[in-house]
Length: 223
Image (cartoon, rainbow, N blue to C red; front, top):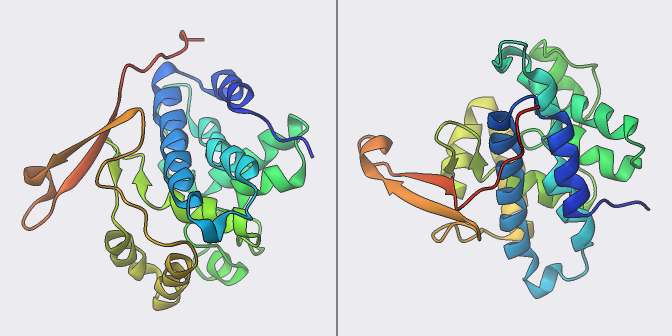
């Protein structure tokens, strides 16, 4: 099976990113997700997973976000939930196998079901977009601990559990199952190549925002 390496994946991000800002936002997030996954993969009980496939999945899962930028440089938040399928289409056009493409279309939330799509009238073809393999579940899981908001932030496991509750108790149950399967990551030190800055004021009463910034990032020129 053809699994792209980090250099090939970066080139794909550069190819599809409409601006250097979009590249920085999306590619950095993907690298952070891989950093979290790599930390969890160090556990002996996960040694049987295909780390190369997990790395590719982490680094590619959000490539479809680029297709949601308009000519004005603004992100189409209303249709953001489509980014997974858009990424699947990009990788299909690039000739990657289904096992790699699925990391794009099957990582949203803790899994999108046909019922979710129909009941919420989501702009997606009705189907189950649920992570199946352990590698898919790990990528989906680690993606939950970092947000591409501005500034980007890390989310502790309990913070994400509180966030996902608004979509139903079943989603919290699904997330708890992932925590039991893979364990909680240590986010106190961030991930290699990125700084973590705690801002208590930004977190409001009783909260702390762990902002992430890239260290000496080298971005491609504007296309």
